[in-house]
Image (cartoon, rainbow, N blue to C red; front, side, top):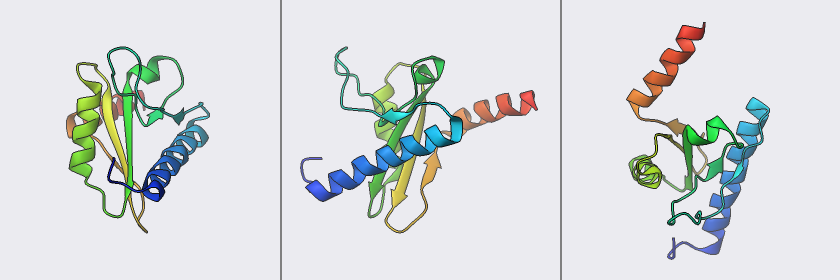
Length: 120
């Protein structure tokens, strides 16, 4: 991120706050922007943190807001960040003047989708 300008970083941080607010509004739960690294060996925290509880250990939300986002690079980062944890990596990207997109691994999505279908 060293070669990104202050404005680009600010745009990315604002997008993280916007995504956290969208999750909070949709769920009624207190999502917030993740800040940096944890102290337990430098493990990356997600860009958007779910509230304390089981959801926090279930998903890892990575956000990218750029002129043109690389979804594959963002997913690679999310997978790398979670390491051996069992979190579902979720990537939310937004290109300039475009709608935000949510990306997951197909197997992860189908597992969650199947759980939803079973409750219907």
